Image (cartoon, rainbow, N blue to C red; front, side):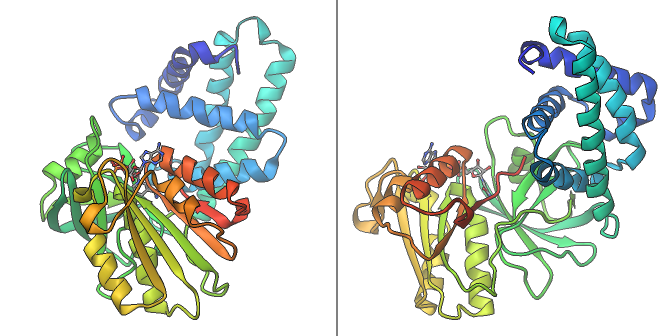
Length: 360
Ligand SMILES: NC(=O)C1=CN([C@@H]2O[C@H](COP(=O)(O)OP(=O)(O)OC[C@H]3O[C@@H](n4cnc5c(N)ncnc54)[C@H](O)[C@@H]3O)[C@@H](O)[C@H]2O)C=CC1
């Protein structure tokens, strides 16, 4: 891997060139701009190498990826074609370390990876490859943040805390993950809370361009940050910025299902007070549900009269430790989730009690 890393972009470009030369029909599955695809592919290959001796971890990584390939129209046979092209691209850019042994090990790993991807693809066979979802409402909720209400064209199964890949009509075949901002509703409508990130094609289109009547595509719901209603464990939720969406969804689901003696503690972080745009909603939920406590946390502004705590979300949550008997759900910027998970581990929380999804 170390030999290829410095030339990874060229190696992956060579791989795509080989695939499209031999199978021109596959080009239509990919977006116009391929730079991100090259990075994603190499990162996936690195993960496979890292887990080469751990088939369970490899499966845990590749099966969801295979399920996700369904929305691109991938067929099981495509993996074998890709395998051969990847070996050839690595051989060309592997330098002096590429020899017969390296090639044999690489072929073994890729054959296993193909099998696990194909298993994931097969698991998703009975679900639609994607859903069409019409935007029925679009509202500006905070600076650069919009709430989109969507009506899927057929029943869309999901749980609070999950997310889905979304494609807009303006950027074909560019899919981005968004968490659902509410628990499943009786009317079947879905809500996404989207923050436009700098240079984010899809997020900017969803916030600034989408209007009622536009039709998006949704992949199947994914992610394991869901409530286990049979376990009755207490929940500690950390929601940072736009990451508060799945936390509100989880609270709504507990309220609808019944708390059954569990406590739910929400720490809602934003840089400034104006960013806490779902605080009123959460406080109303807390007024109606005595098992829920909501604590706003500001990192770049004094909490002052609004009653917010000051500091970075992870360090504030650590101040309230111990968290014995709690399962933590973390959602927000990747750096916050990483720091939050590390802080909770330092507080003595077992790794298995700390849940988060950082969709790739
Ligand atoms: N399931 C998930 O994990 C979801 C993640 N997101 C992600 O959440 C992010 C939200 O972005 P913004 O609203 O702009 O958030 P932001 O950058 O304004 O930060 C929100 C909160 O996270 C804290 N934070 C940021 N960086 C931190 C760090 N390095 N260490 C500790 N705390 C940190 C901030 O202090 C603030 O409290 C997006 O990147 C989005 O992709 C959004 C929805 C769901």
